[in-house]
Length: 139
Image (cartoon, rainbow, N blue to C red; front, side, top):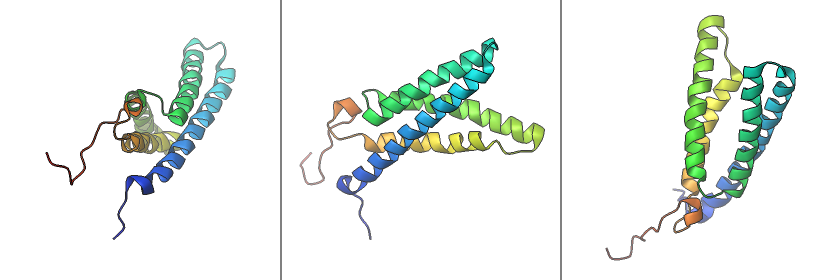
């Protein structure tokens, strides 16, 4: 049986979080392109402009694993599940099509949340970690 330890999972999680940082950069670029096309449409411009900033900040936050990252990812995951989950359902219901981007987001954001939770380092307050007692220590 393979035993996963902090030493064995750390590099894999770090690589995964790096991929998410790149994905947020791609999302910011996508919203930049959409913003350019939406100029003059107040609602769309505000939406895409906001997500250019949010995605760029999240790319930095995930890459650097800033303090409060777990909170930020939790809030963004909830928002994205609501927004993209609703969009996916409406697209399916009304057009009988699959909204691929929404499906990817609905799957990817909870995975990011799980990775950030796993990445919490014992005793590392900057990452929201906590001191864990070893199994061998007395209570």
